[in-house]
Amino acid sequence: QSALTQPASVSGSPGQSITISCTGTSSDVGSYKIVSWYQQHPGKAPKLMIYEGSERPSGVSNRFSGSQSGNTASLTISGLQAEDEADYYCCSYTTSSTFLYVFGTGTKVTVL
Amino acid sequence: QVQLVESGGGFVKPGESLRLSCAASGFTFSDYYMSWIRQAPGKGLEWVAYITSSDTTIYHADSVKGRFTISRDNARNSLYLQMTGLRAEDTAVYYCARERGKSFTGMDVWGQGTTVTVSS
Image 1 (cartoon, each protein chain N blue to C red):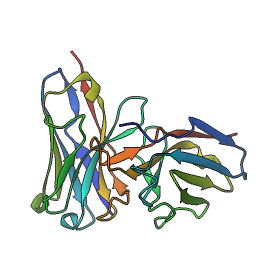
Image 2: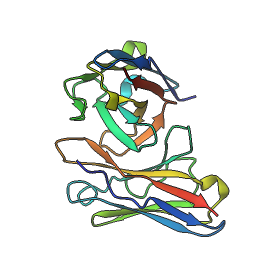
Image 3: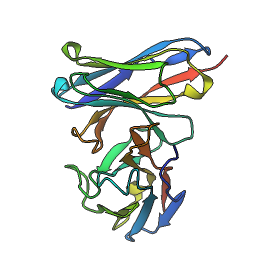
């Protein structure tokens, strides 16, 4: 079972928008519109930022948005802020026999 | 407030056992499905196990199947992960997490994690 593919790093200046991609297969992202996204600061637990592909939990800034098309999901952060600097992981249900959920490889977001 | 607190991690030798616990508070534990997720040092997240609210359905990742067992006690608001036959590759921070819904839509509450180190 391979992890979902994410870019290792993405960077942007304060106020800019960035997009993180998450590429899977027809066994996961391509078949289920239920990708979730997590933010993780160093030494901290992950935090849910997006669920069901594009829904935001209560309390999450509307600067975070998600989308899905085919085998790829995306997380966009608009109006980039210093506190957005963290690792981000996508996650999808999968019909693989090995796992129930498959996570992405993770993307380090750097605010320049 | 809604909270999950893990405990039970530690330093063990290969082949030994540990039991992790996760204490839930601030919500009706018996209404929610739960998962364990782990993160090896400097690595990404890996899903480990999942249990429905009445433990009628349980899943384990192939990497731990036959060695780890997820369980819960709704009367004690607690989730457990019994780990046997531990290996060096099981070294990780283990998180318990609350499932948002009943259709694999994500995990909305996470504990702070407990560290398991397996080394001779």
